Amino acid sequence: MTHDLLTLAAAGFVAGLAVAMPLGAVGLLILRESMVQGLRSGLAAAAGVASVDLVYCAVAVGVGAYFVDALQPWMTTIGVVSGVVIIGVGAVLLRGALRPVVVDAGEPVTGRPWRIYARFVGLTALNPATVVYFLALAAVVTTVTTAAYGPAVFVVAAGLASLLWQAGLAIVGAVIGARVSPRIVRALGIVAAGAVIALGIAAIVAAVST
Picture (cartoon, rainbow, N blue to C red):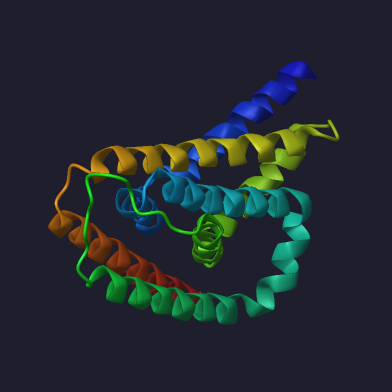
């Protein structure tokens, strides 16, 4: 039993890293948030992303099969709406990135952590790829363990892995933030916003094609 749970914990940790490690739009935004606003804001953004990963993983493992069946008739609509909202978020981010950025080598500019947390929760939750990824793992988790708390071990390990990776990005952003020019920070913001817009377009194309 212990070996079974340790295997599930390791599998959950690897699953969390697999969904978190690709440096996509959200990862770039965490880097930029920490570079411009400081480590506190970057960690708030990281916590927002990891929270969504944790919740999606829990939903997938807990009610994965029912969830898929219930939403199947609406998947195209959900994908298109999510894509449109993501594009809108990307456009807002792009407008903000095009504004002049002032990087102060002294005390970092502080934001409102809960507002940043909520913004990154919303942005991450709109990405259908995250929940689809965890839904694909749900059947595997429920068949490899007989322990009642086995799935919970998997979910917690996946959430912890995501949090550690996202927090690492925030720390990297804070370390290099004071060493880069405003032009580089601005360019990173434009690239991140463009990646968010591309993510929204991809979500719409995927929804329509299926």
